[in-house]
Image 1 (tube, rainbow, N blue to C red):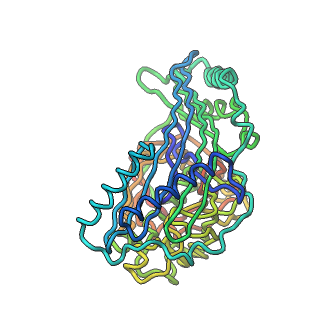
Image 2: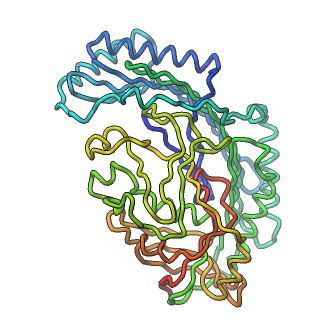
Image 3: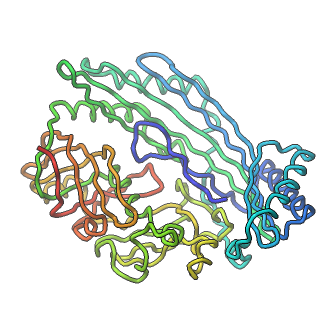
Length: 467
């Protein structure tokens, strides 16, 4: 039932498509129709013997164009529609899904699902969310649907892809380039047997580009860039995305394996999204209850260094993760997660909250906003003097139980307060809580194309492994 962001398999490491988001208090006719069907599914479950039920119907549509080296390579358009239903039967719980929404087939499907649920073991912690959690749902317009996106024609999409392709090939050393344009919209509704009723609508559009250049006999440096958002007017021109991809590829020319050293690490905002996501990954009641979170027992205690403040804010207009309620119907509100390094809240859904004796907050993240500093990247690089500027991560892992991590990276040396020679084939290792305690500065430049708005991060005394 919870909402999630579906990663875009594109060039940008930290870019993702926005999740479906709730509509304002006056749903469209299509959303109202889905809500009627969700309510009917709940009624079917009750008639079949379920004490409680929660039904969610959704319709998702996506369009993807891929352009490679002067021609369209692929055009994909897909539409999906389905029902998910959670059943609470005689102290037992199960969830089911189907794409066959014909009334007679749906009724038989739900009847069988209720019978199957009766065969399961009871689970006293599985109960339908308390209706008190639905109260106080915000009604402000979060602007998640841009009418201009629906008006983008096939010809315009092809023209934008062709423009990105030409810009990505603007250097004679380019041997291959790929560009893409992707968009989509979501529509849905949820209803419950204990009074919940809500709809959502949302849309997105974005571009991506990748350029590969030749260096010598066997090296093929690559650069990529992407931009995605709710509103078309808020995005850069497609050609500028391709320009950035090409520039990043050319900046990789002459890259060597970096040295082994302990030094200042400056992390680009786009790479910072991934680094902060790793830190926040185990910040949930589910992870704690299952014994796989270093956040366990840390409520009200310092954990991530006194420079870091992060708020989960679902009420940002046009935000990629904005919503009026989460997948359990919990009314959206701003939630401080970390304040000056101190843990203030966790992501607590109703099920794991009951298991741990914790009050629910929300079961899934919306927009995570990192409090900013007052300097831009250039100023932070100048202050660092020497060190390593990380532009992207290349694989690696982190242990959610301990926070220990090892990440591959590429970027540049920082020399005399300026971005220097490109480097790669090196790792940074350590422990996430310890790393964030070495955070000494943040930029004023949050990455705009993600639901996690992270700026440049500066860490001191970081261990790098290279030559």
